[in-house]
Length: 150
Image 1 (cartoon, helix red, strand yellow):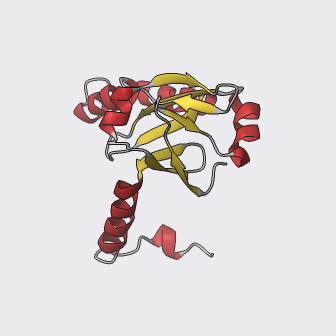
Image 2 (cartoon, one colour):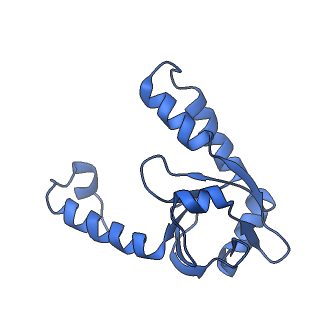
Image 3 (spheres, one colour):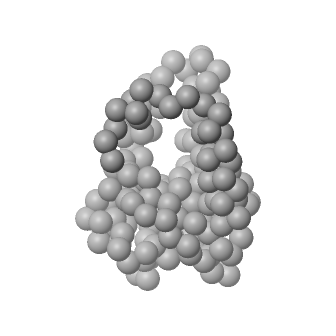
């Protein structure tokens, strides 16, 4: 499980160094083979170990192909997917098209989401968190969450 929020930097060549605490887990899970794609609803990127990506891709591919929501999801999520591999320095190359989509500048946030990571521009991340906090105050808390014990 990938956990934690990491403030990182993209180098001049568009590479991101994976934090040390996640390197062994990634190596064990997928030997450094990962998939990077755009988030279908947010201006961020998604980074998955190859096996977890393949599970997600199978689920998406099994959805009804004539459904407009399925088409949108496939075209955004699968259509923009890029294979990437951790290099010897535990870095991944983020293609320019994906950096442009997520408006990634030098400073980014790598946020563990369990089976994957989200990559955000640092300023966009802070705005997103503030927005979620504000929106959640206007919505009723779902029963599934109220039953959770922290």
